[in-house]
Length: 206
Length: 369
Ligand code: SF4
Ligand code: SF4
Image 1 (cartoon, rainbow over the protein chains, first blue to last red):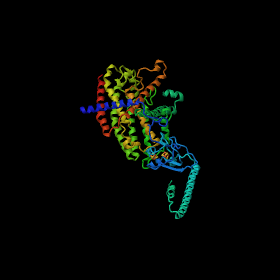
Image 2 (image 1 turned 90 degrees about the vertical axis):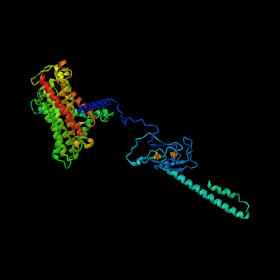
Image 3 (image 1 turned 120 degrees about the vertical axis):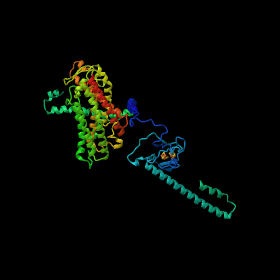
Image 4 (image 1 turned 60 degrees about the vertical axis):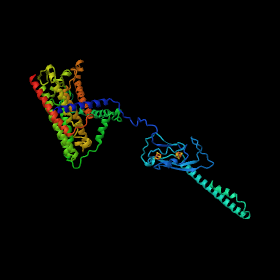
């Protein structure tokens, strides 16, 4: 019987306790942040959208190699000796045109691994976290600063330069062969002179 | 009030319809307020802000909700009993609205000043059970049926203590007329029944003289307990948390109105909110002085502007009703839902014995004093 009355008492008392708590919360300052208007302070070193400062990128491809999901695609073209690409803010000499620098942010897992190997600190995480798109293709960010024509031109330049160099090399090789043959022919006449050979063999490896 | 309307519009049907529609206007306005109150109070109690986008501080959110409900498709399940399914929501709201007929909003306005007001209130309150059962059965859905069964079991059980509480007040005042019950409590706050009833003789509108004196203070503990108990049973009859097992969204989807959508759902919703105000108003009428001002006098009387008095009475009445609605909402966001057996335990083993005991004691005291 006393248990019965105790239950009733407990029922009423605990309900009162609960009501007191909710009454207190009625006047507690709300924790809501009015999101699109007001934003949370995000911590430093947070990992969100990647950004590449193309002025500093030397096209070394390190970030693309380290990325575990292969979402960075880099294509480069060698610059002509006549072109001066300037230096990065860290003092590295730029030698390559970066004709393509795409990050498929839809694949990115925000591991931040690409950030560390960059020798010029030009790929980094920003605090932008609102970048939803309607189309998947729109999530592929193109960072290359060259226009398509420029990129094509630079690639063509690089290809031409390479061809020219190869031709030059071939020509040099042929010239060397000729010279060798000549020297061999000469050797038959004068077998003592063989010191030039070593120097000639070294030359094509550079 | 009726004569006022008649003087404007003449004695015809339109006057009568307008006269009957006045509580509806009040209910609709109150419902908009209650919807906003519910979301805002729940939000504040959970340290949130609630809706903030529709209008300044989200105050036109209820209007947006209503517009949304109007636009919703009105679905009737293929295997439902179409006639009963479509009838139930209207019956439910009608039951809630019909009860407002005897609720005195002020000394000048009461839809029907029945001498059997309190009895009518009990009788019409049971009609809601029929609507719930109808909805649950006609939906042809297991959740609906379970919800309806639980709802009926709950409401029928809780009607017993609710009726006993009403009887206690009726025994004390000696009248079933709600205006009589309210007038008996006129005067300052200590004349309210919850504080032991009037402390001096009162002339009731029905012509009876209600004899009273300070000895009525002995009733105070009994009426206080009765008021609390009536409020608990009222909560159970409106199917609100902690007694919302007929709806129990975590186990029964949403009980008997699972299959309802659009305006038919809105009717159930309106009937729930109307019922909430109704039981709050009845609590106020029976125990907290109805439309009486707690100061025993009205500003209108002090400055001698007669038409202000009923307006003030209405404001007091609305304030008391809304206060109890607020407590219902407050409880909803405080207490968890009871289990079915706990619910029945509470009704049959706690509320009913206590209500009978109080009724006996009060009856005895009324005879003796
Ligand atoms: S953050 Fe990780 S996944 Fe994203 S681009 Fe960098 S290395 Fe690849
Ligand atoms: S590691 Fe840095 S410098 Fe190298 S390609 Fe990536 S972004 Fe450019």
